[in-house]
Amino acid sequence: MIPRKHLSASSLCAPVLAAAALCPAFVQAAAPDPSGSLFRSAFGDGLEADYGIKVNGWAQAGWTYNDNGSDDLSKQAFFNNDEGFNLNQVALSIQKEPKGNVVGRVGPFPGPMPEQADWGFNVTALYGKDARFFKTYGFDDDLGVNRSADANDENFNIAQAYLEFYIPVLGGSNLMLGVFHTPLENEIGFALGSPAPADFYSHTYSFMHGPAKHTGALYSFKLPQEEGGSMLGFELGLVQGWNNMQDPNGDPDVIANLRWRSADFRTWVDWENIYGNGAGDSFAECACGSPIPAGTQDDDLTRYASYLTVSHVLDERNRVAVEFKYGQQEDAAFAAFADKGNAHWYGADVNWYHRLADDLTWNSRAEWFHTDAPVHVVMANIDPQTGIPDPSWGSFYGVTTNLAWTPVPHVRLRPELRYDIHSGHGRDAYGGGREDSQLIGSFDVTVFF
Image 1 (cartoon, rainbow, N blue to C red):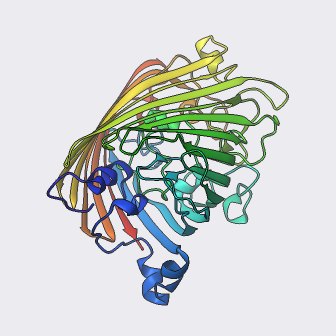
Image 2 (tube, rainbow, N blue to C red):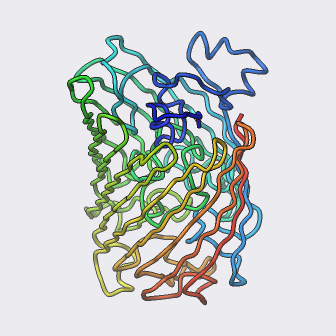
């Protein structure tokens, strides 16, 4: 983060986007960018300076420990499954960002509309235990390196591969075509490679119950406005469901998002929605596709998910974000355990980010999440030997806090504590089905290059 004695556009933008790279027009003086530093030191900065093409990467690993004698962390420390050491992500990305006043999956930015069209692209390869959650059915699910991997092994995938176009129409427009991270949810969707925008090592139950990526098209645009006023943007997408390139039911899903920004850029409101047929798009053989199984490819079963996030920069050291979510799946595969046909999930989480120093941030999060029937494969607790589920559902409460320290720009160190309670039906959610609460401690290291 760029130190500022007063509140400026860059100090507002950086905590919201977790990187000043997304708002270069507002950055007056920047520290050396660790992203792409290894490639620049080896080959020079000509490719980036002359053509705007950046080659960058990151590596993330962490250690986790719980208080109940079980090594199962699958629900609470998502993405991590096992207690102990986890190699989460080793990634390499080559990208070119188009110049414009609209960033796909992020929203509109202040300033006049650039009159010149531009284009860009992003290809990101990912290896590690997190990679299995970013596989795309029909694209990288059947790679040889993944065939012998079980749920606790590292995977490899192409996390993103898309073209991007800035078009000077309306108040500014952006079109993405290809495979890209979802524009939904508070903890994902920025035009940056994970884990850069992730303020926590663990993730919310809301995040777990949403899509990770899509294949298709996403069109983002800014409405024309008077200079200096608030900004309103919209996103419309047509995609192959949740985490799929091939969707056996043959029906595309529709994404419709609204993004409002206050004139001073302090307050952001994002309402994000996806609607479509959720039948037959979850695949046990590759542990990929949608995490919410329902029916077969010949069925027509409605799936809908909606997220409303309001974030506000209180001052140069504090920001808060509140997320509300709702989802439903018609004829969910595990709903019969609760004597239901359809499953619904909803909840809220509150995040507070406090900058203690230029290189030290204290992040805290409280969440409540409820499912009226089991719906997610991770919550189903499927026995790997028998294939028989023993699901958990009801209300889940979680509190998380961490310190994120960047002693040098290339390195982030992050100790984190998380405490969860399950109050509901079915199997107890933690400790191998023996505990309804759990405390997890973790420490992760991320190196950017």
